[in-house]
Length: 385
Ligand SMILES: *Cc1c(COP(=O)(O)O)cnc(C)c1O
Image (cartoon, rainbow, N blue to C red):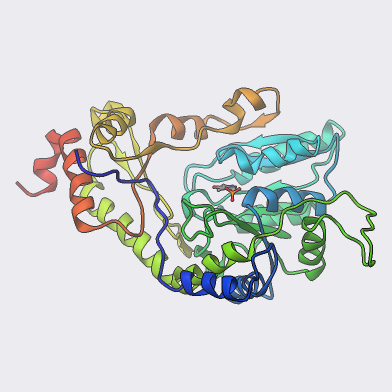
């Protein structure tokens, strides 16, 4: 059996160690310093649109602070995409608020605008207007932001954009991470670029990033002694981690190209097989293709996504079912949900394939060999005999 092939491995560019060494040499080994300032500047420059960024300890911390900045508190309701990683929804519960989950639509797999509006109307009818809307760009594919923003504007509800998986994605040239009243990025080890662990809060209004930094530094008031008028958090990014981030920002455009090339290889081989489908980019939409995902209709394909996953696992290759929707999670089973089964079906039939930007030709061959065996009867026609 060959060495492990990971779903999404960290991929250093080379300059990360230079910035980390600088931090050591200047003794900026702390949750502040020139790398933190530099990374925040890099992020804002990359995203454009007049954004500001606050580098934080994780994407989850960024979502938590964003909800606080949007005034979410005990007893409130927050609308959240159901099909996502639990980190999109957990901070709602940290604040004693209730998530209201929205189903996916089949084109992008993200928040269904129709079910979003249905939910808003119903929650208002029941006497509680939601405090925020959290759409997610799953696996890098942008959500239908024009429709979601239109609804959010009409009902005057702020959007907290969870762009944790979508740094480098865009709609008509406007980058993901700039659509929200507040937006959130993640630099966890498995994301398209990493700081080993970290995140950022992004906003066009500087008061949001300024207050985020304040709250993330234990909410210290301006005084020579420790003076506090607010509950604070320890959520700032370390200057060491930010050094890794600065190196990674230099290679972000390359990483997007590489992930898209991985997607293209899977697509070229397997698109068109009976029961196999990929997620296409709607016109104007650009995905960073953080993870390549496929769905398998067992009735047509003659195999299930689980057959594929286990065959890969037997060869030491990691793949993973799509995110299990939050409304199906035991911990959120009491929360309201608006939908029609789209995300459930995706979860049943979908698989994330190894998608690291560092995948070598030899590793791709190992993956194709296993998938070839799984799809044996169709393979002859795909390879042209
Ligand atoms: C990774 C991720 C997060 C959380 O980011 P961390 O940095 O791991 O805390 C939030 N939302 C989504 C959709 C993610 O994929």
